[in-house]
Length: 252
Image (cartoon, rainbow, N blue to C red):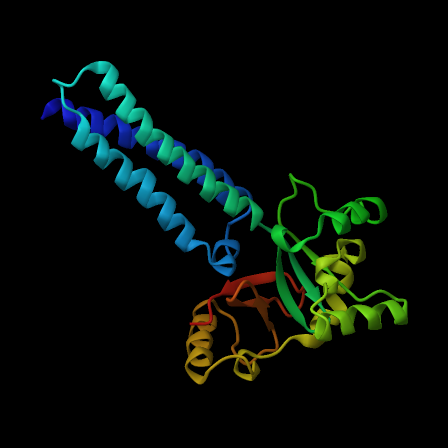
């Protein structure tokens, strides 16, 4: 039994180190709050964690028989490790493709933009026309202003294509992005008090008002805006004077 437990412990330790290294790097780089919440990646993490931390070491515990020939034991463990690595690569690749690259303000809303939403040709064009804010493979999440272009015909085409044709919105076109600070005057005009946000239920408004009070913020101030993500949303609360982000809160 000691042999089995030793094999199990070593396998669990190795799996935990590999998982921490890969997922920890993705978390620290791209998925810190509110990234992990808005992308809804918890189910991917659960699958990877189940295979790498539960299933793999448990199978090793079962097959680690000290009387089994070492070559056969090594083969069996190698098969288990290969399955774990495959699951880890799948999870890491999925997280990489869906990593948050931008938190954008455009028109009247805040939206998260994931790497998977950006077209390769559009990215290449952005690197030529707007290199400062263009996405690269190493880019970390940035807060940007995404206004419609000054050309009225081009702006109308983007709006119509997005609404009626299922085409790209301006938040998917990094060539039009501008520094966050330049959009703050327009952002200020869109702020609402938590109790006035129409996308929130009565219960959510009450819960948020309580949390704002605990943070020392006035619930009745026009200081909040909804941040839209991948089927989820958060409430971004700004300092009314400086428009710096004071808090990003789950609505429930």
